[in-house]
Image: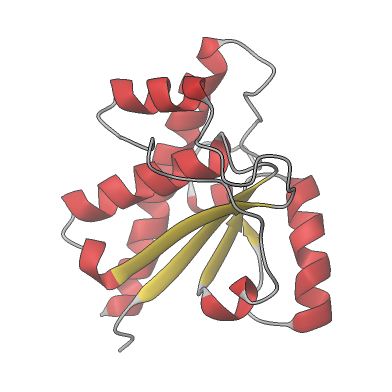
Length: 159
């Protein structure tokens, strides 16, 4: 039985979708008493926002649901991440292709689309960056749904 499961969420710049997923998943894990059994992080495939806090709109939308992501800082994925995480979960197909390139060259955890764990019927978490407030709420809904499925999968691994 593994002592701890590690989860990495990946999007493009690590300021909207992946930090939101990190925050939502961390809160759900805490609520279900699994926080001490999980290591949770997020990153981006690009380097434009390194060291920056999540987008203000992401922080506001998450905050309305009682989730504080303000302490997170953007980082770029590293080759070592594929060896250090049990789950590497990507928000969309383009980022999946980019992370798969790293995976094909170096091995490690096989990256997957995060929404495979959800019941929404969608494959990708849309990037809300260029849209309105409703896009950030939709992202939260999709992430919450997939996070519940991911926790169920992890719970099976931990027993």
